[in-house]
Amino acid sequence: MNGSMQILTFVHVLISLVGIASGFVVIFGFLTGRRLDRWTAIFLATTVLTSLTGFLFPIERLTPGLAIGIISLLILAIAMIARYQFHLARRALAAYVVCSVIALYLNVLVLIVQSFQKVPPLKALAPTQSELPFVVTQVIVLGFFVLIAVLSLTRFRGGSSSVETGSQH
Image (cartoon, rainbow, N blue to C red):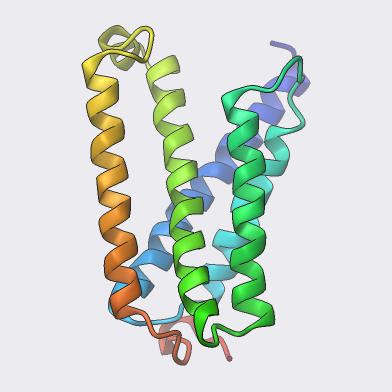
C-alpha cells in the first residue's frame, strides 16, 4: 500500500471511529430523552464523511462495502431532512431516530466485518466470515440495534437540547 493510500485509510478509519463513538452518544441521548445537538451534528457529519471517503478507494466493482456506503448516504439524507428541515415534527421524529440507529448499525457492521478480516485472532475464528463466531456476532449486534431502536422510539421525544451541550434549538 502506497503512502497516499495509507493516509486515506488512516483518515477513513479515524472518521469512522469518531462517527461510531458520537453515534453512541446520540443514541444515549435518545435513550435518556435528550436531544444532543452538537453530538448529533458530529455524528451525522462524520458518518456522511465515512461513506464518502469510502468511495475514494480504488473501485473495480460494486462491493458490499460500497453498497453499504450508498445505503448509508440515503438513510443519512432522510435523517438530516427529518432533523433539520422538519425539525423532528410528527413522523419526522420516528424517521430521524430509526435512520440514525440504522446509520450507526451500518457503521458498526462494517467495523465488525473489517475486524474479522484484519485482526488476526478474529480472522482465525472466522477466516471466510461464514463461521459461527462471525454469524453469532452479527446476530447479537443486529438484535442490540433493534432493541436500541425500539427503546429510542419510546423514550425520545425530540424536545429541547440538553443543557450539557450548550447548544440552542
